[in-house]
Amino acid sequence: MPNARIDDRNLMRLGLFMPNCSYAYSISTYKPDPEDWTFESNLRIAQAAEDAGFDFLFPVAKWQGYGGKTNYLGTSLETFTWASALLARTTTINVFSTVHVPVFHPVATAKMGATLDHIGQGRWGLNIVSGWSEHEFGMMGIKVIPHEERYRRTAAYIDILKGLWTQNGGSFNYECPWYKITGGDVSPPTIQKPHPVIANAGVSEDAKALVSRQCDWAFISPPSIAEAPAVVADIKERAQKLGRDVKCACYPFVLWRDTESEAQEEQQRILENIDRAAVDNWAHGLKIQSGSFDEFTAEMYAFGGGALPLVGCKNQVAESLKELYDGGMDGFLMVMLDYYKDTIRFKNEILPLLRKMGVRK
Ligand SMILES: Cc1cc2nc3c(=O)[nH]c(=O)nc-3n(C[C@H](O)[C@H](O)[C@H](O)COP(=O)(O)O)c2cc1C
Image (tube, rainbow, N blue to C red; front, side, top):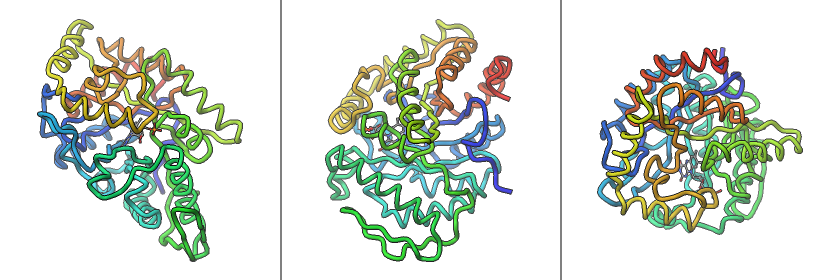
């Protein structure tokens, strides 16, 4: 029996924005476990997350770091091979990979995805990102094309994936300015029907239009709790007009201590140790090439790479998650300071509160 897809589960979905990259995700030299990017560590965290009953694991796909003292995200585990090993060593949790459209041909992605869906028996999902970093793609000789065209290519990419995953027997043909597929064939067929869960990460106008038309999940980055419901409503209304249901998840940095002031002191330690050169490189690339992080300050980038700060005592963090959930957010890709320990602490300290609030089983 395939396991439940994350969009078939009900209530608030909880996942981890996993540390498959070095210095994930504060752009700061203050990091309790700087080696948490290793596979051994990722596996330990994944198994703790599964034990806590979390719904999914989500990586970041990076090909190069952002310099500075930390070389932020510079050492990273590639997300298809990473997902393969995690799916083989877990049984219930869903695992995503992230594909940069310009890097992998869609037939290769469809084939790898079908393989991963078999390894995980229906627990694999795909986050499709259009790619924005001239720094990373420059290394490969790949040109970052203009934003609007980039998203048109991503739309074609998703059409091709869906076609390959739903039309068997070499019957799928497709032609667009970027790809020509003749007799497209991917066998074995995927376990999930009609196809594995597809997400897109981004909240620019182009991203919202794409996600509402073609994706199952929108991974978004609202700059505050107060602004989140409007972003979510916009995406969901666009989808509903097209007769579709799209779910939304954001990535909060959950940082809690016994008291609010202790949590704020911990946040301060992260900010006092900012890797300024890496923050500048990261923010510069995003500001030029992305439309999703325009309202972010250097501190927000530094604190969690653009994560939404939920800082306080355990009750405050639980209440903030509920407030976001009540505002329409279906799930959370949580960022943590010390992933393994914090996953276990979350299970023991915050999950019981969420259950009491009736938003988790
Ligand atoms: C939750 C989330 C996860 C993302 N993951 C990645 C990633 O793994 N690799 C990457 O290059 N970009 C990633 N991005 C960046 C997006 O793909 C996108 O380029 C960015 O949000 C800008 O989107 P826009 O071009 O629509 O403005 C992520 C963004 C969000 C919100």
